[in-house]
Length: 106
Image (cartoon, rainbow, N blue to C red; front, side):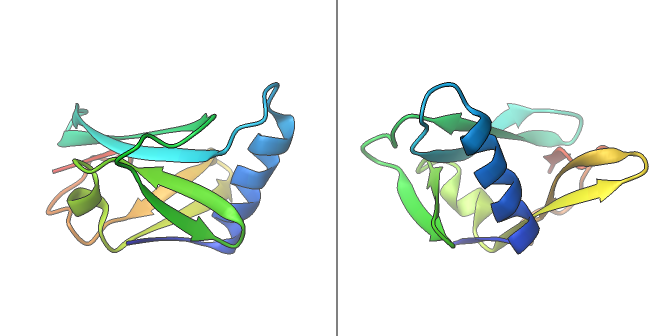
């Protein structure tokens, strides 16, 4: 389904440790919008939805809703630290184009 790099796993673990409540994992989904047609949405959640796919990546649970699953299939998620800033990046083989911010695709 999807792959989180070691850097991404560490970033999610750090976010979970810093959270006020104890989240069950990371929800990743795709919504219509952004400059290229679809945008990535991510956030810590307390539990998966009943119809979510649950992907385990080195002890981190990732939840993906059924609508987003085909759009995210084969995606590698990384966490990059650079001079311009740090954040998650998506290498999505299903994207025919993407915007310069890297947060949306078409």
